[in-house]
Length: 208
Image (cartoon, rainbow, N blue to C red; front, side, top):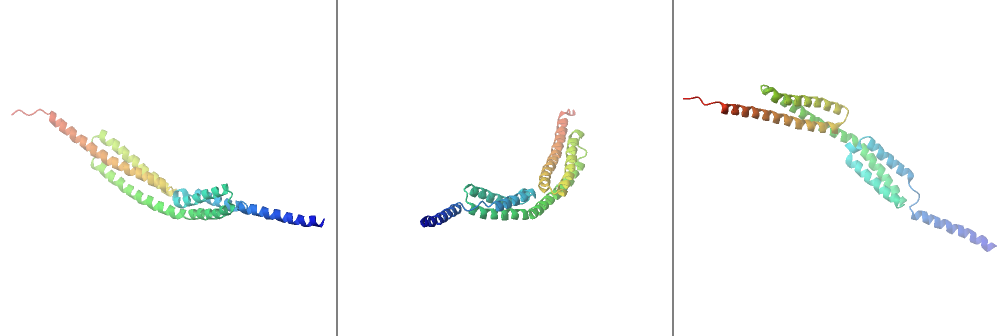
């Protein structure tokens, strides 16, 4: 009886030790709190615009989240906890970089818009200088110029709404339009000259 009483506590103790060993081998309990915090921080950074204004920092955070998921798949909870903490820090860093990225994008868009507005004035000047071109050649160019001027108004609205990437993309399109306007005027002038030469060639020579 006494022997049984002695064996039972030792059996319980051994079972406890084995259970602890098994848990330790799996890395402990899943770090749910740390994982939730990391995912929330990442989502917050994305919502605030990290994809557009802090892409490199966001990519670093996403890579850590991928590493975290792999560690969770292996049930390496100890490593996963550390990676979750690192993931949150990286996501917070991405969120903190958004304002700087936004300011940089605004400066780039503003510089491009100023360049486009100068292009508009140049295009207007070219159209005015060539106002005597035939209407059928000049009118399409005028229509193109009017559309470009409307586009500049749209860009100003994009900047006000902090849509700096869209503003830059639109400004780049307008630069191409101004180049087309200039080319259109040159082509129209060339057609007029060709028409003059053709008309001159058809005139009969005066008899001596």
